[in-house]
Image (cartoon, rainbow, N blue to C red; front, side):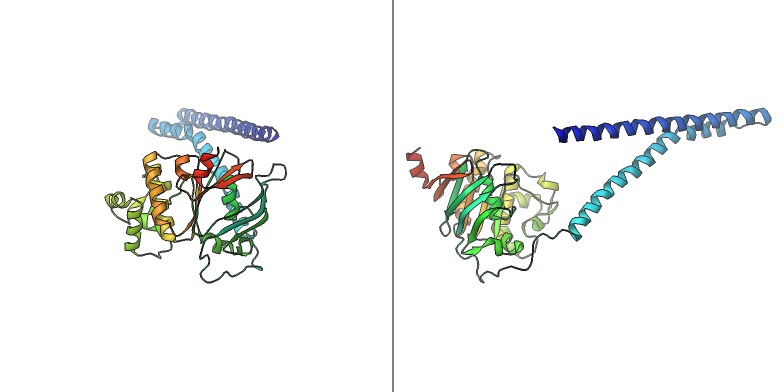
Amino acid sequence: MDRIDANLRAALSTSAASQWLNLRLQFIGVIVVTGVAAVALIQKEFSVVDAGLVGLALSYALSITSLLNGSITAFTETEKEIVSVERVMQYIEMIQTESTDYFQMPPFAWPAHGVITFVNVSLCYRNSNPYSLKNISFETRPCEKLGIVGRTGSGKSSLIQVLSRMVNNFEGAVFIDGVNIANLELRKLRSNLSLISQDPFLFCGSIRENLDPNYLRSDAEIWKALLQCHMEEKIRSMGGLDAEIEERGQNFSSGERQLVCLARALLQRTKILCMDEATACIDYQTDSLIRHTVRMAFRHSTILIIAHRIETVMDCDRVLVMKDGNILEIDKPSVLLSNP
């Protein structure tokens, strides 16, 4: 409530300052118009005054208030936006994202098997909040498809946050093929992970730039990925790989955006794929297409699938069930269903 009160006080102060300024600008406008009218009357007493010039002068005088208001508004808005620029420059120049003293160089072909190991991992986002993860320990098998289910707030997405080091204040350790991710350069770690979230993000640019931003793949490889993701026909109808994608992919449906992101993950050829509620907001037909593509195209990768729909995790090798930051059980889907 204190923050809401502070925000309301700031909004009230801004509104009061705006009204204060507007009143004085209106007063200045009245003075200018009155002055022009007075000068016109005085000149009429001593000489002939052109009515057209008087009308033009009054017209300009009447617009002086809006001109002053626009100029001052532009100046104040520029001043406020400069604060944003200063904040960005502060992040660029002063804030160091990570230390470069302790990086470990992983083996050449790392990760070869995609084995993910959590060892006594606990996570608390803020000191005043309860733990989102509580002493989590599990290990995936090579190229395993692991489903992760649980109620909202059970800690499912926190596992992905820790694995990708979106948060660094976790306790315990996470290993990928025996390498502690805390000792890896952040760019090295994330370049070996593919993440498809519930809200897929597409950049404003060509389809080629969205799928292969580093220009590492040939056109044939890109078309093959689109074919595997059932998007080849759609992209060809738009004009090919140079067709433009609108901001945040507004010229695609939600399911099509997910399929494009899946094609991008396919082109990255990473050993680990994480899907965080990727099919939660799409229809069952697109969900079926995505599950089929993942099953065929990523069969040699380790896949973590966070889902609410039972159908999404039924073809997983194992399913991990979470509740309140703890692992309740982990086993094959058929075993879990037989023992509810």
